Length: 112
Length: 111
Image (tube, rainbow over all chains, first blue to last red):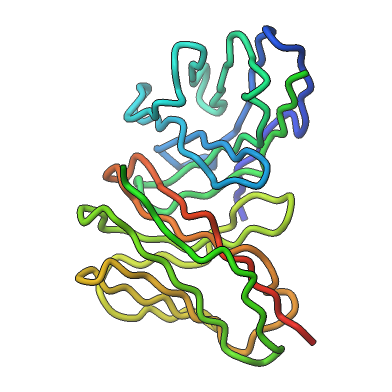
């Protein structure tokens, strides 16, 4: 059964450094999303992406964040200058038609 | 602010019993609702979606939706220890562009 994959599984970085989190959505899906979950808290929406552009973004998704679909398979989330409060699990999700979203295993980001 | 509310639990049920999980939402414009299961340290796993008022059954799971009361529920029949997890209720609050999640209800199925 097709799955969303994410790399790396764990990323440790210093405050102020740039990180890129990578995702390979399910191949025939058209909608892509990033969510994050701070330890012990709820899953929070960051951004949705369709037809090579951002469809919606949350107030968390400020100028420090960007997304890109550099080729036909990858979907990336870049954080330009990480802060301590960016430490969280980051989940990529994809959906065939903007309805049922399937989540990847996540990347645990630790900012020191 | 569009919210999804769940009782955090834990909800403890004996093996073989029915577990009932509930959720309310604030956005009357939401049309689609989802239940995800999340094991500790893992990602959310989609188990049910529901779009119309009434019941939807899939194996041991039944989702119920009442848009007038802004209420969604999930029933798990014949609960098994492997069902022990946190169950997340989510509403589509962005027309397919965004899910808003509740905090989740922790379910413990006891032997």
